Amino acid sequence: VDIDYDFSVFAVFKPNALGSYHNVYELSGDKCPMLWIDNSNRFSMNGGGSVIEPSSPTANGSTWRVISTINRSSGTRSEQRIDGAGKGTAGESVGSLNVGTGLTLRLLGRSSGNGLQGDVAEIVVTYGALTTDDEARIEGYLAWRYGLQSQLDSGHTYKSAAPTDGSSDSTGTGTGSGAASGIGAALFAGTGS
Image (cartoon, rainbow, N blue to C red; front, top):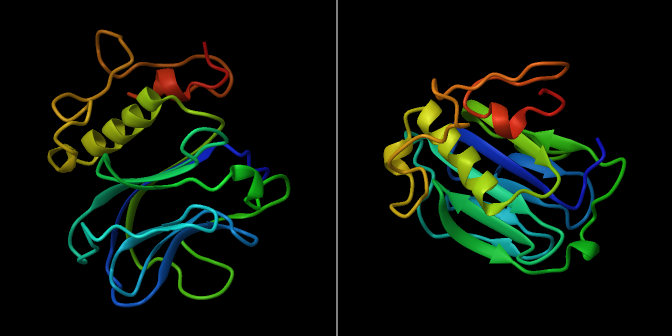
């Protein structure tokens, strides 16, 4: 997989193995972005050498979470959000991260150690820069799709209403080769028209 400097992982999951390290994803190589549950049950993120370890909320084995990890080539380099609430940033230059061509993105595991143990509803991986609204739309889409909208941060754009693509049925449909359908069609349509 060729990994661009701008990529993000959005995951809806409920870990049930607690008290030890369990990876949600990692890129191969030193100082690569990764997300894991640590031995204190925190949702921790490596932002390229700087670790983001929010103290709350923690994994408890029963609560589904929408976890967003955003990796950018400019501005705030790495950011973690849990249920749409910002939990930390890391500002190390993305140029010093080990990203580029030929790296492996490992979902739900790692090259050594423990993979995630729990339930996974959906994982969305994006390549290329997203706008802040795109990021919020993906979080909103995932939260509403899985009935987690009440957990979204009180100031989240899509706390009160699901994102739509502007069509009257609020589901949207792409057409053409590689088209997407559903709420995220306008965002994920790719080569559709």
